[in-house]
Length: 284
Image 1 (cartoon, rainbow, N blue to C red):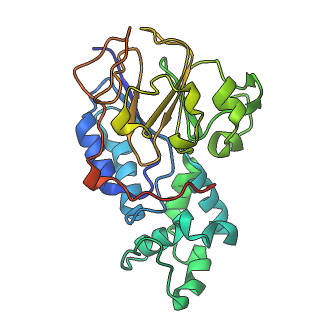
Image 2 (cartoon, one colour):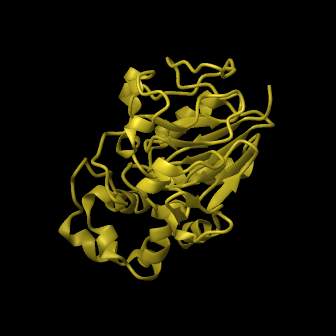
């Protein structure tokens, strides 16, 4: 079996899901695990999730890469100058991170902070760990191997012209949501997270009917399936589900893909009881 790459999308503080995924994919020495960013916010264990990712990158039995997502990017800014537009909307999940880093009880879904907490909350530098900010700043914005390009959100460009990450602007790699990219990109396979798969062009999905039980957890776009695909876009679901890139990639459990050699391992799917609670798709 050749070297494989596992891409893990936006974890957002869901440590239980992350641990389950890492146990299920069981990466081996020649494999690579790429975390696509957004390790904190919304879930109840942002602090512990970041610790888990950092320790895995340092001690994994395989190569492991952690990328910076837009949530890490904006927290770097908030550490220097708090951004109320990011911090105050409850759907962004920043208050969940505050409770996690200050060892306070987790918030219920939709529950705001207490009034007396807001003064400290908006003084981000008083409670957000500086070493975590330093780690955020050290994270690369993209990764590339023989299988694909890996970014948090997408590429810089427009229409049919999309730049390699090394040649384009940095912000789009973490923040972009351009329909032109989803509809018109035709370069090397790109694996990304950031945007919920339900918000991507459903008419371009390669398997629109193949995964009825998991219809919103994977989105693939590109030419007809081949044994060595060179053009495609993969989106991971925003709940931290892993998707595998490479010629030995197999579709999610319960799906089939013609003209593609499958492996003995299946991509893990979170049990319903362990999936993060659904939230509206925010712009962050």
